[in-house]
Image 1 (cartoon, chains in turn cyan, purple):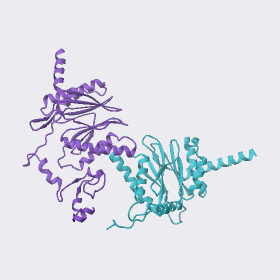
Image 2 (tube, rainbow over the protein chains, first blue to last red):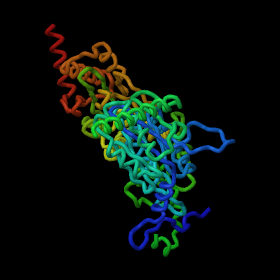
Image 3 (cartoon, rainbow over the protein chains, first blue to last red):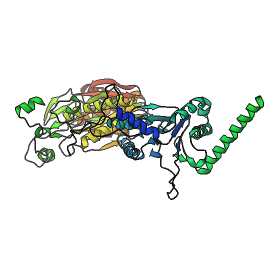
Image 4 (cartoon, each protein chain N blue to C red):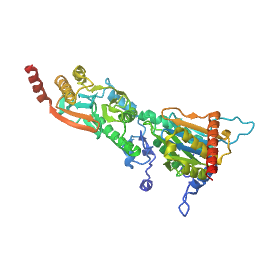
Length: 249
Length: 275
């Protein structure tokens, strides 16, 4: 098993690009959309649910994974790669608890995942992970966080972000609609994530998966009925906006 | 290494570095400062546990015997942690030094005490200081006392059975308040409000337990610590010298005093006679 002298796959191009990493980012752009919103005391993750074949069992949770009681992750890109990362992150969360006697902070686990991704951009014979992740949760002191990692191994903190297919229009929508008022209201945050997702996804509660986390509470996957309720509210608000505009004319 | 190749030196034989922790295995002979401190190059084919059994087994023929004469104590109270130690080092019946520093300043907010093998305590607590600093730089916040003591306990557990002799108390102040952990070379790690370690600890415990309250004032606590060490030095032949006293506050540790036990003896005698 002489892996010492395998050719490195990720090497620099003449103009300074790491093409393998950029190709990995292309793979991410083909994955189904995921959106994350951070409020003042709530964090929301929404993912696009791909339509399942007739004979396939509709498993409710696939793209949102729990890393620890207080940390959840949604990804866009290669599902199989994500499984590996999620497993390693889960072990690291427990390892940290064992050696430091404290649950991980969001920044720590994001840094760990990002370092892992970076290692694979600089290793013999290995390709980068083809996924971007949105990591949400609450630190022990109650502050909420939303981080995003990408295949190059960088990570940033966001107030709201989207990854995957159609990430750009969704992010633009979020930039327009995210306000401090929204951040302060839990219901508004959930609706914002839903509205952002519905911009690019076929309308319908069946096509989205929404998860919500509050401080010191476990991750809650919203039931179909709840999602439908929010969609109905959103529709009503849209109609009211349209009515107002008509009246102004 | 090119020179090694030219000389025909087979470096894979020298690769048998023992117990590389935190850095991954080193394939160079004491090259990298990062890993050389935690690697011990052991002669090929030697099992440390077996060969060191002769030194740790009291019934063995080897007559090298490590003495653990000392008194150290630490206790938590409402205003932090008081750490008091003696300063005598003995080798058998001979007093080798009366001026040993048995409190190791790991960093401005963590203290460690020394009981057992002086070299073992000093060395591993310096390794701990290095790990604490790396933690601080990586995580942009101070390491907690629980985590620091756990790091030390995990390190020495790797050497369990190999003759390390270390009974230390890790004291500090972190987000959770004052912290006091007892860590020893058997792999024990415990937390409590009062600890005393060493041959004179039995005498110190007597005085400590009878005078201890969580709501002591700073002056009362300092006096209690000093008095407990004095009584231990009075009765235990292997403890003596001076009492070094530290106070661990929220802002870090402060060195309070160094008092000769002979002065304390006459001071307490005078107090008793006044009554």
